[in-house]
Length: 588
Image 1 (cartoon, rainbow, N blue to C red):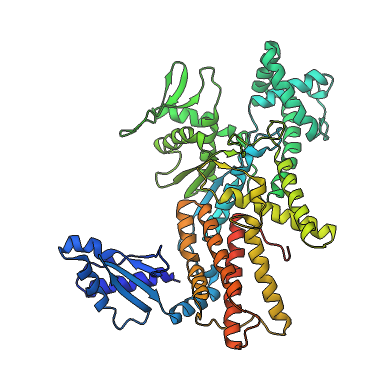
Image 2 (image 1 turned 30 degrees about the vertical axis):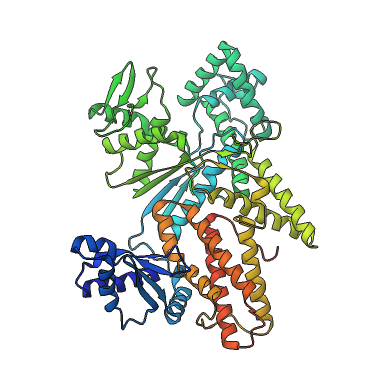
């Protein structure tokens, strides 16, 4: 279905054309002065220059062609040439009905659905998730859901860091501690143990210990590098250890991501694409894309018109070792062969921008992906503490993600218990839901590329622009609807009514904006636009609630219209927070 804004624009385009002007001047926007009008067209200003006529005269010509139009209860030309509009109650009422019965609440689906890969998460195995992993997970999950909401086939890939020097460090440290394990016996020809020689807790201690030791012991460092090379060359024992590392790490990662309500379709990593690298390197050489530069194999990716220097994309170091750019290009080869995506979106720290510029240009230049394939880098800013520095524990260290989540959940649990008497089990479940909303909304309400302050106290507040406030609004609506149903009235077949107060109409105007907002957020890969919208919608709902006796209304038809409107608001809010990656409880 067409949005209300599109319908109004079409009518204004017709009026401009009927008045003798090009219809392109009929573009309409929502008014930023709701006290004056609801919609506004500024096309007369531009048309005046083209037709050498005063703007107000153009505006009046257009209004003369709207005399018999029943879409507007108010239409006026305001100096120097603005056209101000207010829609009629019948237009709003009809559009609300259409939204309610329409699939996806009036959001137009892609006519030709695309296959899209969203690359997000990107943790290194054998290391615990910390707060630095939070933004990639939260933003990536929301973008994935937004793409799906528009009808696309979307594949979320965690893209694990699982094939580098850290693996050699772990293997070398394990040998130092337990040299008698069969993995280190070159003559062993039996079956390696099915049980891992370490737990996740032990593994998380092994890696930093090995890393620190390698910095002060050159022999150990050389041993770790050698083991990395042997692992990547297919050493049976080391590969068996690598499998154990993967098994215990991925199990722990899945638990942590589940706590964030983040799900990946693919659990692939750098190791999965090693098989593509040799042929890719040969292709780049044979076709003349790659050349040697001080012993390293590189592809020039600078382009005419670049405002800053773009260094070559390095494919192999001088010692023949692969880099992140190598595995990223190989990953694109695998994705193209398996999924042929029309778009690949990378949700990564914005400081990686140059790296992805090099990779994207190399991929297009060498034909690794078709020219038509969209490669998008959605770089995110830093999550800082209230002191303005990168978020840390109170002791000054990097905070583990699960500890941060527990800290917020504990804060929410205290608030819930203070406010009402509930069972321990119900309180815990509700605290987790509200805590997740606080974390995700607190992050997503900021434009992804911007740094922001992670303030637990502010994010956990039930007032202001926060996740708990949005959930409180949804729970308020649920409570009203439940009380309505208890009077033996059904929520089926409710009829929308005309707005009778300014607060009711303001709420209706926010509701009809939902499809336009989703389209904007979709085109710009901008979950923060969804947050801004639902905050405005929640505010409009709460103003309407405080100014209206909803259930006490004696006019049954009017009451039914109120309930129908609340039901639609609830569905919009619930759909929006699903895209953002959290849900609302029944009670708070």
